Image 1 (cartoon, rainbow, N blue to C red):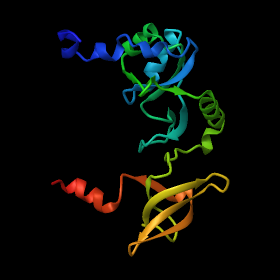
Image 2: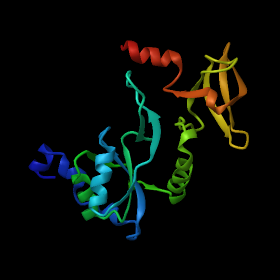
Image 3: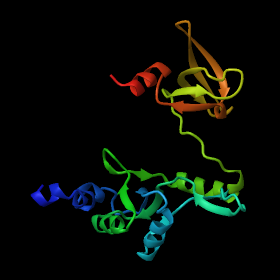
Image 4: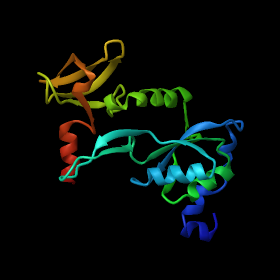
Length: 204
């Protein structure tokens, strides 16, 4: 890396990357992270460049005191989905758009999103009035019960039961482990056990 690249990180973000060519030139879906409140502007610019994109929107009511106005807001603030052959030329063009920050990556390079996930999202958005955001939970997450008779209990998510739409968590009680089935909407993911979070807030 030359001296100018070290001073300005932008070329690193949009420069040549051999891993962009690993998809056999097949178009795929990618998540473009953008500045919040720039989602619609970025999507418009992508379309002007003839780059297919998908910006999931959901209806909501404005918070104005004088009157309520129905608005369409991004379902996932800060993200626009792009469907393209992501070679280096396209990658550079995408990141030149004002408001674009980066294409979400994994260890292999830009992270492909499965077609079925995007199509499923398109389908549920046809019933957007009943759509709500839900925390992304996986086994091993620390969770807290926020509703019901077990509200306030904290434990580790052990496994999901997709058939019933419930989950099993472990609750630490008097240094013992217990498990209980709960409706998934009754729990939220947390950063860790309460004592660890207090330690992080208080500092050394």
